[in-house]
Amino acid sequence: MAYEKKKCWSILLRLYHWAFALSIVTLCITGFYINSPWTNSMTEGSASWPMAYMRFVHFVAGYVFTAAVLTRIFLYLFGNKQERILEHLPVTPRNIKNLFSTILQYSYIQDSHDPDRLGHNILAGITYVITIAAAVFQLASGFYMLFPEIAIWEKYGVMIFGSQQMARYIHHLLMWWFMIFAFIHVYLVIWNDVKQPEGLISSIFTGVKFTHKA
Amino acid sequence: MADTVNKTLDPHVNRRGFLKGCTMAAAALGLSESMVPKMVEAATSAQRPPVIWLHFQECTGCTETLLRGAHPDIAQLILDIISLDYHETIMAAAGYQAEQALHDSMEKNAGKYILVVEGGIPTALNGVYCKISGKTAMEMLEEVSSKAAAVIAYGTCATFGGVQAAKPNPTGAVGVDQLVHDKPIINISGCPPNPVNFLGTVLHYLTFQRLPAVDSLKRPKFAYGRRIHDHCERRAHFDEGRFVEQFGDEYHKLGYCLFKVGCKGPETFANCPVARFNEAGVWPVSVGHGCIGCTEPDFWDTMTPFYDRIPNVKIPGAGIVADADKIGTKVLGVTAAAVGIHAAVGIGKRLIKGKSDSDVG
Ligand code: HEM
Ligand code: HEM
Ligand code: SF4
Ligand code: SF4
Image (cartoon, rainbow over all chains, first blue to last red; front, top):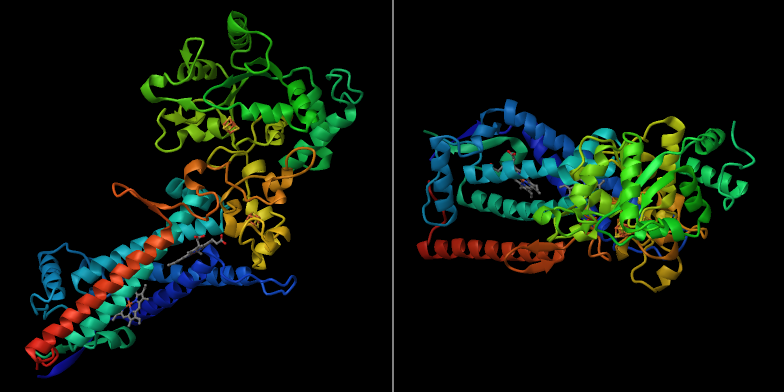
């Protein structure tokens, strides 16, 4: 059977994906360090500053993460067809149908897939939107902890989280969402790549997917 | 003219102590030395602001720290620059006399007095959990605050409900600003708060005729504008990654940072490292114990466990209370197991069917 190349992800979406993924890996490692620094410099005056460096890296990665999230929100509204938010959520009959067929497919009950759907399936779409929403809270709590004296962060930080401690707590719990999401995500991406020869993994590098020629 | 020879003041405060107190308050307020004479002048002017001090659901620790601290100067100074008309702990009057004093002061100084509240206000069952002379705390607060010029909530009980508001808050205790909405309120939180911050607020009011600038929790910024962690003397140890691992260990003796034994300095707004307590100039971290975050809302719920960084995760219904990372690791483990099973089923199915899914063409 013949395949044809179809342009699926814009360059901006691919840049966002890798900025997001790599910053999250960095943020989780440095975040764990900030929570429970596992080094303990025993020599006075060694000038190693591990905590200061870890925090610095965390904040730089935090800005990359923030830029990625803002890019994704822009693409939800102004991206190509596959990238828009309406293609992610079960809001049209076509999308609702896809949600159920995906669940059946993931449970090995039925092999079907949507021949005319180029973008994400809806189950994936929902978790991506939840992840971006979690990311907004993550960066809000992060900036509230980073700039506690700036009036706007102080005001909204207290309004949303109540106190620095609650912001830190929520920041920490949300980290677990990102880690669990990443784990399942990478598995399912590989699973889909094995099940369907559309070149899913390479699509997040090249932007191109392969579909059956009609 | 400043009363530099100390004629109007209580003889217990000598001129040196008086100036010292004013200078400390000026320092806490972040004012320059040149403001001290102005403050002295304001503090010694004839018009001492009338103050009514109410106690509700509390331990009186706030008053105790104020009176019994090793800063007799500060306590004396406060009592000298205000006219304390009603204070249940220290006034001589009792019973009807006391009631009369309260009533008289409210009438005489209507619209002019400062109301200081110490203690939380229970609101459950219409406030029956705290009654004084037949009136509930809620009724008293409403009555006395209605004629006040401003309200100072003194101590974490009065600002955020206090320890009695800890979950599940059986008496429905709340802070003053949940009940009083039509008066300027200053929250001087802390369990107990530093008397210097009370003195600073009052002197600010006397010197500038208005209350100091506050944050969004109504705490004066001069005292609660910055986190403990950002002006802690152990901060260099934090940045250099030198931490106490356990109380009493080698690193504890060396005075390293208390972050890993649960110091809440990074989450707590207060000036303890700068203002310090008692004549000895100490504060918790300086004597080897982490900050417990007592100036923050709900600190009894959110800052506990005191010797861990973040609260435990409570799963309602299941009765599970555990460390966030332990639960996170378990969830990740279950996820990994589920992924393993999912993959195994896929492979098994393929073996049975005898062909690979991608052989569709
Ligand atoms: C997926 C994204 C992120 C993850 C997984 C993450 C993780 C963490 C963790 C685990 C902590 C330690 C909290 C604790 O004590 O338990 C932390 C602290 C912190 N994070 Fe993040 N973070 C993320 C994004 C951000 C962003 C976008 C910012 C904003 C610039 C940020 C700023 C901070 C700050 C200011 C702290 C406190 C550092 C300190 O007090 O020394 N984080 N983060
Ligand atoms: C080896 C690493 C990874 C690979 C190969 C990979 C691959 C992919 C692919 C192929 C897609 C498109 C999937 C679809 O159409 O449903 C995708 C989307 C996505 N990935 Fe990854 N991913 C990786 C790591 C991560 C990590 C670590 C994160 C973050 C925790 C992440 C977050 C996302 C998100 C949020 C999307 C949705 C994009 C959108 O918003 O449209 N990925 N990834
Ligand atoms: S804030 Fe603390 S010290 Fe003050 S009355 Fe309440 S419990 Fe006592
Ligand atoms: S002792 Fe506490 S406040 Fe001081 S640097 Fe360490 S964590 Fe921060």
